[in-house]
Length: 133
Image (cartoon, rainbow, N blue to C red; front, side, top):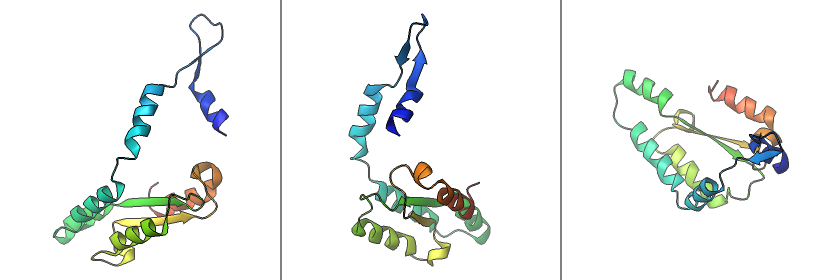
């Protein structure tokens, strides 16, 4: 799987004598180093604060469409700890019912990191259900 993905970064060399690896390792390392510093729960909370401001009904309907987060969780990914899931559920249910929340969560139980490979059909259903198409 990884080998197939890595080959997407190969290009024919300018002299047509083989291939050149075009993946920018410096950028990849920079992204990887910064990833752990991100506060994704804080970002989700911020969207929630904006979403729950006191809008008139017309503005609120527009905001519900534009300020929505659809979160897909890979069931086999150990990063989704019980504490993290509980925190997300608290954010989701803050001030409104789960169905009206700006945060909708979907779990694909058989998917690992690559949800589009491990459970493509389930991901398509999430996209259709979440109105993302």
